[in-house]
Image 1 (cartoon, helix red, strand yellow):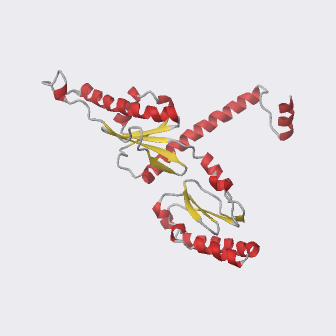
Image 2 (image 1 turned 135 degrees about the vertical axis):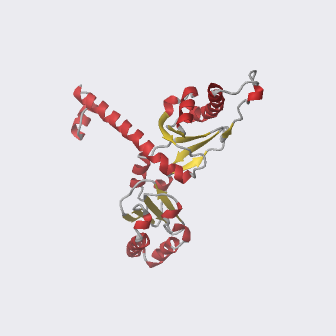
Length: 280
């Protein structure tokens, strides 16, 4: 939204899809240079050679050179004015586009963000838990409100049955104690800002967490496996199919509601029909 409000004389937008795997497409840099040349040509034509040189200086900055190896991406966006610029790694595909105007071309970015809603990822790992929040195109670890969580459950010597071996049910209760503490920490975040939640962990951890959580209604997917030490970029890639499945389910539900409403003559299509229905 901030980019959509920005103004520049000019504001240059370069959007480029990134084919995966990147190693199979070594022409990335050549394609980017071709788009840069196109942007500079348009800038020189409409804003003059001096402005084009200022834009070229921004585009030569090392931090604005595309390097998809640094972060998984399906698209790249480079946005510059004569005074500054930034490079965005996008988790969604974009159509190749060069726009030189007084505002940045953000339509494809906004559409992509709409298809990548904000969400949280809870990572269960034994007696530990980490929480990540989907901020735009990446996961950011939450380090407030009690996260990351580490709980030392009661041990055998702390129980009345300390002279007996801990059996399976007692071990399950140990994990329930851990996950109750995790759920308590999760409660503050969910109350302040409810978001779809993806939970990751081993199958056993997922089952035990589901037994105790009060936030099951916000869980939109599960991801099996041990991701306790996964880098946020790796976790983003692993969680993506789970989120896409959730979005597809929501989309199907909306279309079904629309079809039912149309069958009951409670939906209209077309500008004239909508205008008449709104007037009524």
